[in-house]
Length: 372
Image (cartoon, rainbow, N blue to C red; front, side, top):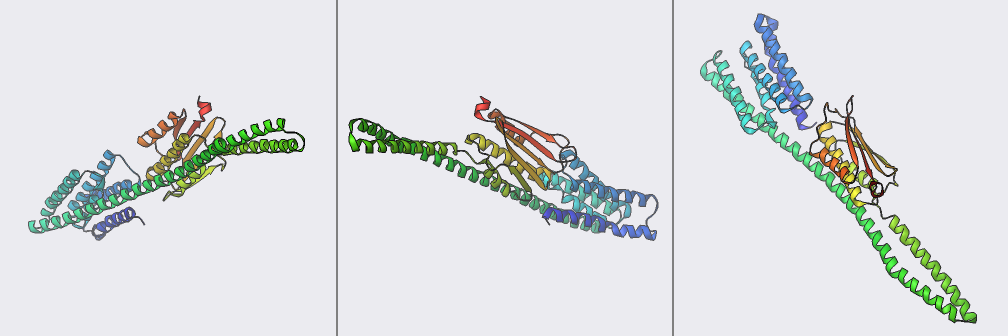
């Protein structure tokens, strides 16, 4: 189980256990009336707010609101029940302050500690109240530090995964580009050296066939025919090398998909799909990389399907995931960069949020001939 999942389980466990003494007091009749109702409302409010915090990501204001509900609920439970055990929920709140500024987190802990000390002072001697409040302040600082370290480790892991995907994509694209360049170099060498010499030899044999007579003329004519045949074969080989000098985009995408961690990427494409323009292949590969990165970071998906098809006049890209989706699409740096890559090559891309969850990308990039 990941560290953040362990922290979530620990938070729910602390919430339940901290309320157990008060529940027993309510069962025994030691806590009744409005006090019991207020405590129950605060207990449930804390659980709901904490559950919402852990269930799905929220905006900054929503997170602050949920944290405020938890803090007020925890302090209310301590005040109403005159019991120190519910103060453990304040430690849970401290463990959720990892994504706020250090100043705000310190201020939040200070306010919680002072408020707890004031409440405890009304139900216990001042020395005891200060001792308990100071102890819980240490617990809160420990929880916040643990949350910070966990968040830092998670970000480092995500950055490492992104760098690993970029390395795989760059390696695959470099291998394909090197292969294409080597084939083009060989084709040029054959055409410029062997083709040139065979052409010169054919011309000389043509002249010799006209000057020779008898048996010699017959052999010269045969040699001339063989030279023309060999020259034709060289031209065919050069043509095939140039035609095969295309980037194998599918292989590069599969290399990229195999490097994804925590996500099953299913690539559907024809093995014969090749792109002559290396710049277009690079743009498509980087777009696929951005799709995988966004799905891993934001979608909470288990599967991602990527379809790459050769269409009349270009290449179509379609991607979809089974994640949580989004109510509104906001194009950040990643989606904006993807759109710019397509438009740079006269293509277009469209993003779509699926109604029942998931996210889709539809893109099309024309060939240079179709774009012109």
